Amino acid sequence: MTGFVSFFRRLEGPQTVGRGRAFWSLFAVVLLVALAYPLFSDGYTVGNTVYFFVWVFIALSLCLIWGYGGSLSFGQTAFFGIGGYAYGVLTLNFGSAYGFTLVALVVAVAIAALFAVLLGYFMFFGRIAGVFLGIVTLAVTLMLERFMAQTAGPEWHIGSARLNGFNGMSAMPPLTIPWPGEPIVLSADIGLYYFVLGLLVVVYLALRILMNSSFGNVIVAIRENPERAEMLGYDIRKYQLITFVIGAALAGISGVLYTVWGQYITPSSMGMTAAALPLIWVAVGGRSDLTSTVVGTLVVLAAFQALTIYGSQYALVFMGVLLVLTVLIAPNGLVLGLMHWLGRLAVRFKQRAG
Amino acid sequence: MSLLELRELNKHFGGLHVTNAVNLSLEPGEIHCLIGPNGAGKSTLFRLILGEHHPGSGDILFAGENITALKSFARIHRGLSVKFQVPGVFKGLSVRQNLEIALQSRHRGAELEAEIGRLLTFLGLESEQAQMAGNLSHGQKQWLEIGMAISLKPRLLLLDEPTAGMSPEETHMTGEMVQRLNVGGMTVLAIEHDMAFVRQVAQRVTVLHLGQVFAQGSIQEIVADERVAAIYLGQAHA
Image (cartoon, rainbow over all chains, first blue to last red):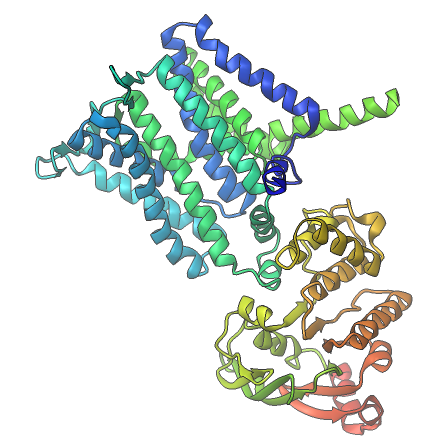
């Protein structure tokens, strides 16, 4: 029982912003609004919101590896793509009966994680760090993009699934939950919305617990001073590898859900632009905090989409400007800066009231 | 049996012979100071002992076990611990969290809290526990790192210039801290330039010069040795 309590006590801690009754009340309100929202909206808008949620997982992966771990990975999109393509290949071959799409989701994420074990092993046990880590991971994602882009010919297939080169794969089945009577098909609006929202909440809370645990302590210690961390007896390579693999799995989840949402995946999802955008969401939000990352990503994505609709050619320029502004004004992230400011304000208010 | 034994240790950086056939042995329970002019190879010797550098030839024995091929973290598990020359604290984390990270692999729950409290008192950092470690004064950073290093309950503590940048009072307090640890049974090997500190704590002194053991003995013997004075003066006039 005490173990159970101390487990959940880790929802709060030095590694995550937001604690106490005020924060969790706000969390509950936001969650309730999110749960009720589809009832007051149309399918298209809900589907669009799912699209935003889908990207939050890859943002969280970057938050974990870069923000907490201090290793800038430029290639989270590699795991995104692997997850997406793996889901496509699996479901196009085996269909969606007997809840296989859910199995495919898990297996696809596991494949992305397995690839990260391999890549991460050579990087971290080879002591690649700093900017070189970014270069290697970027090279890997661009290489995967190039490779997939040249798979147009009919000889490029896995089982009955054609890879289709630059056009990518499409028409994979949506997630389907087996149910007595009729299976529940999670089409890309309300059904998928609740599934992704549930997954998001679980992942967010689990990551809060992980980062405030002794494991999280070691991760931030490695970011602050890897040599000191090692000289306290931690095999930092293992910790870095585990973090990298968890991050890859999160990026893989994004990839699978993206594929499920749009029923297609293309090589450009692993390209340069795709690789750069998550860095901007996370940097603007606040890479060293989970909540800031989630909020920042959703806000920037919504702004980006609005801009794409009203002034398409300026949207990417705006993203660049946003990144530069963030670096100049609030290097730790705009949302995180705002949250710290609110925190200080609350303390001052309390002091005055007391 | 010696606690630490270096046998014919060699290390080259290109054509530079930084560690030249060094033989050194530490007896359990002693405070041993390593002195020598800049560039004598003192810090390199530490890095060899810690496994950050690997020797070209020679062996490192710890409590009779050959640890030459072990990784750094594995050597720490055997009972080594270090305070670096430049304070290696986790600057962006609180003082308390710094200590928690050092202690968490040996203690859990209420016991961990108690141990952090005890260490904060020992270091005189109770009122700074919520501070970011990066905001501490230089001397306090040094103490915090010593605290992290000793929290591992090492058999051998390596201190690389523990009093660098400290006032004479702080230096003296650090000396007393080291002596208290030594009474508790900890063997200490310290690199130090501050001769007041060396006089205060050292039971034995080794002088390193151009990568070689130049002289060894009690502090009185070393101070009386004219050759030692010559290499220091030679360095100063160079």
